Amino acid sequence: MSTAQKHIAFDVENIRQDFPILNRKVNGKPLIYFDNAATSQTPQQVIDVIVDYYTNYNANIHRGVHSLSQEATDAYEQARIKIQKHFNAKHTHEIIYTSGTTHGINLVANGFSSLLKKGDEIIVSALEHHSNIVPWQMLCERTGANLKVIPMNENGELILSEFDSLLNENTKLVFVNHISNALGTINPIEEIIAKAHNVGAAILIDGAQSCPHIKPDVQALDVDFYVCSAHKMCGPTGVGILYGKEDWLKKLPPYQGGGEMIAEVSFEKTTYADLPHKFEAGTPNICGGIAFGAAIDYMNSIGFENIAAYENELLDYATEQLQHIEGLKIYGTAKEKTSVISFNVGTIHPYDIGTILDKMGIAVRTGHHCAQPIMDFYKIPGTIRASFMFYNTKEEIDTFIASLKKAILMLS
Ligand SMILES: *Cc1c(COP(=O)(O)O)cnc(C)c1O
Image 1 (spheres, helix red, strand yellow):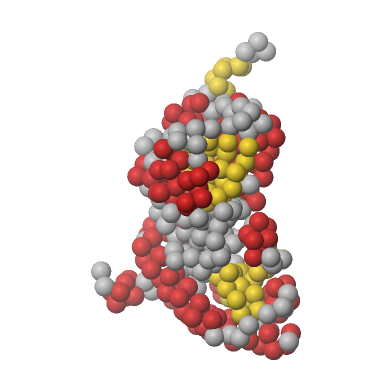
Image 2 (tube, helix red, strand yellow):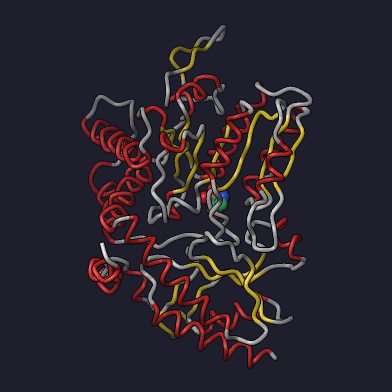
C-alpha cells in the first residue's frame, strides 16, 4: 500500500468521534491529550461494553448455575480467546488475567522465588520502569540472587555488546521492556530474547508501552513471559494479562491463594486448579476483562500498521518543530522509537511548563516517569513528556508548540 492510500484509510477526524472525552474543555480550552503513555482514552465502543455489562449481566463467574453467571462467564472467557488470538498464544490457558503490568511482573517474580538460589543472576535493562526494577530487587533479597543491568547510551539505546558480557550460565532470568515509557526507545527484543535463550535463561518482556502500537506475536518472538495493561490500549484500568508459555506457567507456584484457584481444599492439603485458574484467585475484574477484549477489537478495526504509520508521522512532525525551539533538548533519540518525546527547555523546571500547558488545556506528563535511573543517567530531575496516540492530530501539535513557546516566554 502506498503512503497516499494509507492516508485515505486513516481518517483521524472520524476516529476522534469515537472518543467522547476529546470533546471536553479543560480550563476553558479544548482538551489536547498528550499523556497517552500514562493511560490512553476510551472509545465509545468500549464504554458501551462496560455499560452493557453492569446494565444487563453483572454476576460472578465460574460459580453460579444461573443464567446471569453463565452469560458473564461466557463473555469473560470469550474475551480471553480474543486476547489469545491477538497475541497469537498457542493455548487459551496461557493467557492469565491480571490487574495490569505491575501485577503480572510481581506474579512472575514471586514464582521465581522458589526456583532461584544464591549466586544466580537476573538481568534487567537501564531503561526500565520502576515496576520492572523493584520486584526483581525484592526477589534478589529473598533468594540471594544478583541483579545486573544492561547499560544504555546517550541516545537512550541499550548497549547490546555489554549485554553479551553479562550473560553466563548463572543467568536465570532477563527482563526488558519492549518500549521505554520515558524515552520511547523500541528495544531489539528478538535479539535480546535469542541471547537470553542461548544461555538457558527465561525472559520476560514488559509490553505495557508496545501493545498500544505494535501487535506482538508471542510464538514468533519465542518469549517466555509477556505482560501488558489494558488501560494503555483503549481499555479500562485495573486489568491486563500475563502471557506465559505453558511449561513455565506449570512450573511456577501460584501467587495468591483463595477462591477460584483451587481444585480441592482440606486442612491437610489443597490441590491447585489447572491453568489459567491457578493464577486467578478471587473474583477478578470481570467487566474489565470483557472490555479489554472490546478494546482489542477496536484497535484491530483501525489496524496496527495504520496506527504505527500515522503515529510515526506525528512523532516526526512534532520532533521537527521542537528542534527549532532554542534551548530545547530532547532525551531519547534512538533510531527505533515510538511516539513519545521527552524534553527539557534550558534550566526551566519541567513542572512549571507542565502547569502552564495545563492552563492552556494541554495534558503532558512531567517528572521522572517512574524511571528514575534514566533521569540519573542524564543527570536531570525529570522531563516534560508528550506522548501521542492515533487519535491525536497535527493541528493539536501546532497548538502545543505555540503554547509551549508562550510558556517559555513567561518563564524566562
Ligand atoms: C505503565 C507501565 C508499567 C506499569 O503498568 P501498570 O498498568 O501501572 O501496572 C510498566 N512498564 C511500563 C513500560 C509502563 O509503561
